Length: 265
Image (cartoon, rainbow, N blue to C red; front, side, top):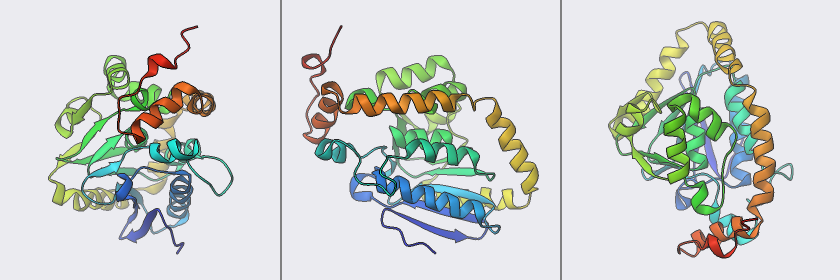
């Protein structure tokens, strides 16, 4: 089994359990984290014993808070990676393409790019202490691909625009009411519930599930092209004065002054 630094991966019954293990950064991901997540999902894909994948975060505070903004403020990027590039789009595609249910077990805060990960999961089960939302415009970032277009399919245009344009946070019950997640359970029952769903999937035809997942994805696969373009734009925007102001202000724990750097022309 591959040894990881930023995540853990284990097979538990029918479930491949992937845990983002950076609690000191609220499970924010750097480039290395994304590389390791891709490797774990690929292992789960090829392991015939794994019938569903559970994605969760370490600790009780955070599921994932997205890209490591402190890292971006320090180096202007998300750190070194295996192939020399930040492969978050590859991870998104892999989560959609793996022919097994992906279950997000949201144990705490799911914000920014972490929120996108739970949106892209096939189903999401949340602890009653979990919170959801976007922070991109607050820290000089955005996801104009799956993170917004697919989100609109899940919760509707009006609610998706609210989530992104106002950067509010929502409780687990709020998320359930808007159709953003599938179930809310007490925090101490979260992994037990997620493993129960994985066991239920294991009793079903894997080929039927594969075809069903591909059928569901077919309706939104065109968003992958939009996502690629958006990530290219984000790479450029992230190192602009406006993008860096958001990251720097976050690292310095101050309110960003976007008006001083934005180009209104």
